[in-house]
Image 1 (cartoon, helix red, strand yellow):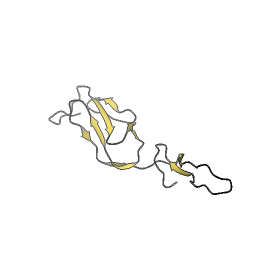
Image 2 (cartoon, one colour):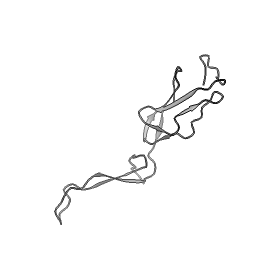
Image 3 (cartoon, one colour):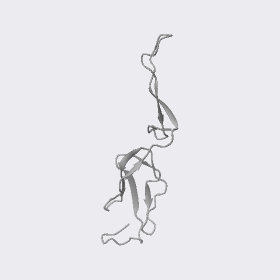
Image 4 (cartoon, one colour):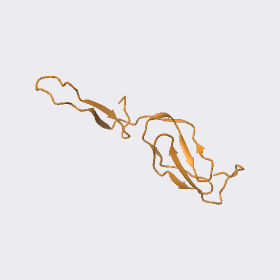
Length: 113
């Protein structure tokens, strides 16, 4: 935490909040500064994507924005039925076939497994 002159402010407690720009950040997203620093150690992003940003805010202070980063899908963990089969006649192919999608725990499509 810096003052207007870019000097470290270590003699007061400041609460810092973190949020994603267009996505949800999980974990402890608000922490108090200790000796002018805040270390967010358990943040999680469940959304795969690129050009993501983290925004750090505190009331009355200029926000800090991270550089862009990417998050890839995690390992295949979930099967999700995306198209349900419809009633059919025995011995005939489905008119609407079931479709299953492989996803990670965050609900992101896993294209390779």
